[in-house]
Amino acid sequence: MGSLTPKYFPAPITRAVFRLHDSDSFKDLPDGFIRIVISIIKKIDLSSPRKSIFANRTTIAEESGKSVETVQRAIKWLEDKGFFERQQIANPGQRGSRSPLTPTDLFLEAVELHPEGLRFSPGQHHANNAGASSSARASISPEGTPAAGTPSQGRFVRHEGMTIPADLVWLCREHALRPSAVLQLMGLASKAGKRLSTVIEATKQYLLALHGRELYAYIKALLSKDRDFGQVLKEKSEEQESSQNSEFLREKAQILEGRTFSNADGTTRYAIEDGLLVVLKDGRRAVAQLTEKFLDSIHCGRVRERWITRAQAS
Image 1 (cartoon, rainbow, N blue to C red):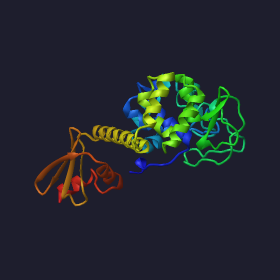
Image 2 (tube, rainbow, N blue to C red):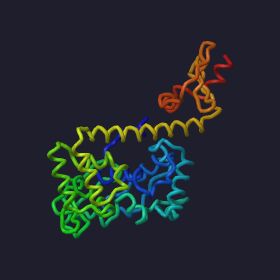
Image 3 (tube, one colour):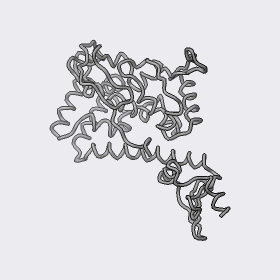
Image 4 (cartoon, rainbow, N blue to C red):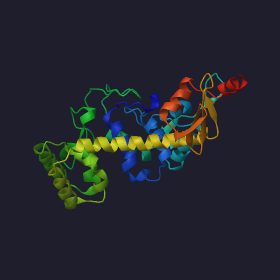
């Protein structure tokens, strides 16, 4: 299905998506809403993060593989948490109205997309929901913003008088690791043929409870291990995607519960019973898990509900 096809987005958007799994701000986020929030994050304009998002609810539902009703529930959750605001705007000269989503500072801070940490030069542009990043340079900045001449996908920031990667500054701000320690760890990672940012992202769940010297010692020990942390990160991403896909299929099974389908000539019939796909063919009954392939068959019209009555009438 198209909505499940992997796409590539600017590094800040990718990091924001990972924050959904790592930040305490989203510990109560229902699993069924994750893909919806990801879809919304991908629509944030990096050149102006506070800019309202005018995405149609149906579009978000299609992109996330969820129902419009689930999208509405997810948006309500985001509003109740103070992450987004909605305002009804009448369509000029037309009937009806629109209700764009506006990210709040609370949300932008939680996903590390706050404008203060994403200061781009006036000529820099990131296409909204296009997956393309600009090669324009970030502006010269004060502490906590991009250093001069640094591309957005490899940003550095000034912290306590030192320049360190933007995706590692949280170690200093939230876990009392000195910027000099970060630079030392980067050197150790380089000698070990590893990338510190990859090691950190792959093991982040184990680092969150550590601070200062204890954190430094733990990361240093990780760098000495003969382990492919890039593969660990890849497996982690695949596991998250698999979990999201399973949730997607469970929700689709609930929506389709009790409904029956058939192919064009009625030789094969399908029913959704207790969350499972029941296949009836040649007098035989088989039970299987609901799959994306079957949902794709419905979407493409290879199986339909209305064909059943035609088959029965013949």
